[in-house]
Length: 469
Image 1 (cartoon, helix red, strand yellow):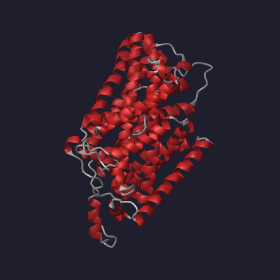
Image 2 (image 1 turned 30 degrees about the horizontal axis):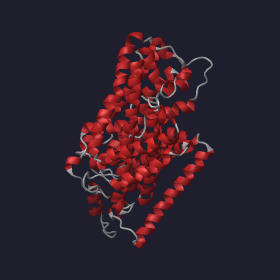
Image 3 (image 1 turned 45 degrees about the vertical axis):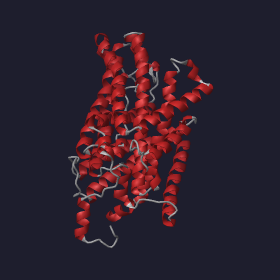
């Protein structure tokens, strides 16, 4: 759209029809409903693995209340925002498109930097976790050269699976989800005769100090990233209809997947609060049913990590593809495979960065990722409210059934929690987050400079989207 075409009729027409921002894909490679449900499930959860720390930090009652109430004040608002915006702007890039539409290319680019760094640094932790589970069976992977080789090989193999096609990855996620959740179904059934409901109301053992920071971080990281699948919207069959159903289904699966095993485990055995750390579910399984269920649960944990890696890599890769389609990145970042129609350059870039992170001690970086994710979500909520207020007539196949006052309250409650997460950060986290943010800003202006000098080829879709300004 040329800048001088700004009549009211033209503007009204443009507001009714959001522009297409992505390249089309072959229909046979599109994601169907069930694979999308399990990809969202792995983006957010991957199963109850990792929720044990909530019990260790605050006791059974607070853990149960946390996983019962927190989805309503955090997960549901994020999922509703994702459902409305992903169906209104069904293109690869997701939240990048939303921020761009609302506040312009600078904020779209910065959103992309924050979210990509969040995703790719999380991605780096999954091969390490996978090898940590395998070393329980094969001790040779505990340290040294064999461990480094195992991390390298596992990363490359998992990334190659992603390269073979999103539909294959989706159905792989379905299989991994069923297998990784199955030991918890067995644990719940075996635990029923042993459950003592009075154990659920325990506030924790005397003498064990509560760690509220760990408690809220555990809830936060087990119930976020609902928006990550939005970067795949351009690859979904009928996204306007499929996305809301998939988000609802994944939400129910995730919440039940956390709450039911937690009730079974805390009710079936006496509380030993300090033992409730990551991986304790396997020991609960052994106490309740025997070593066979412990072994099954350890295998399930390993498969869950594989699912987490595949879902996160898909989100990162298709975000890069969407940013190339929008003109934030050079065109070659959006090149697709001739055989599988997957964004192989984006997959390669994400894999290389994740592989470098696998060999780093990135405890502070992961904490900084929390900070960057919080900044991105605040911008996402602001984009949602701005688009609802200033583009009310745009076609929204799914619309959050609230007026502006209700939407503001819906976004304000999780935003308060995001501010809390940032407020309790350490000085190191502030410094690392500041440096990464500055790098993201410099990258935007460097790309803009390259575009002005025509050093690299860019799509001009992003320029066409500036009509809202």
